[in-house]
Amino acid sequence: GNSVTQMEGPVTLSEEAFLTINCTYTATGYPSLFWYVQYPGEGLQLLLKATKADDKGSNKGFEATYRKETTSFHLEKGSVQVSDSAVYFCARSNTGNQFYFGTGTSLTVIP
Amino acid sequence: GAVVSQHPSWVICKSGTSVKIECRSLDFQATTMFWYRQFPKQSLMLMATSNEGSKATYEQGVEKDKFLINHASLTLSTLTVTSAHPEDSSFYICSARREGRNEQFFGPGTRLTVL
Image 1 (cartoon, rainbow over the protein chains, first blue to last red):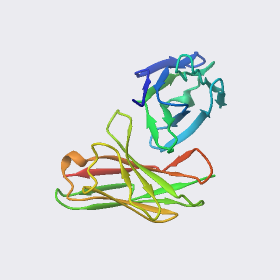
Image 2: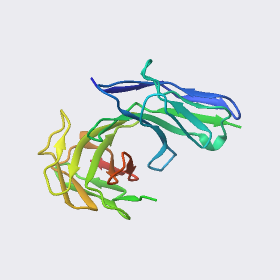
Image 3: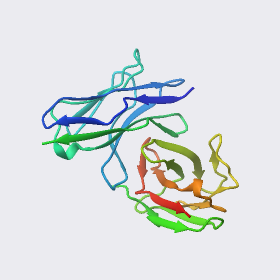
Image 4: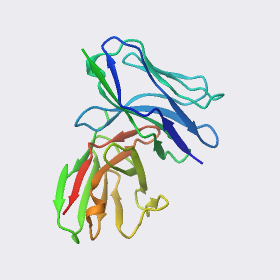
């Protein structure tokens, strides 16, 4: 089938800690992969994306690498800030541009 | 940037009434729009794909007669929840795909509460 599985939260980190949020997918073919972020009270915003194997998406210090061999797209950031507190969604798209999302991981960064 | 708006942002209605939610792409044309539903502390669930000028494509398990979708123009799609019941209470989010780009731009969502 087509699904996205991501690490369950909530995740609480101290400022400047290292962040990893795991995401794996199942899909036929070669989907595009995305990370979206939802800040409190706001809609989803695209954080980064990768469209083919070994691509690395990056934005605002966040990175994720499209790993075909492990069907993964883990999100990482070397040093989180309080302003990174949000819910993060991993997603994949199919050839019809339909998006399928993971369950979301809530991140809280404390000073 | 690409902005997508939704109206209303929240609505409370009585059981048995119908509610219409609008999704507009403000600064680009969207031949394809998508409707999602998000339950508390859960992920977005794709409900349907809305194509301008044609019938919407519904995901398995979504009642097309209950969730009526109309994509009348390149900048507007509407979702009508017919004969709403309390179990329809949820957060409804739309997105619009910009032509030529494999990226969706999301609206801020509409909170529906059915009493």
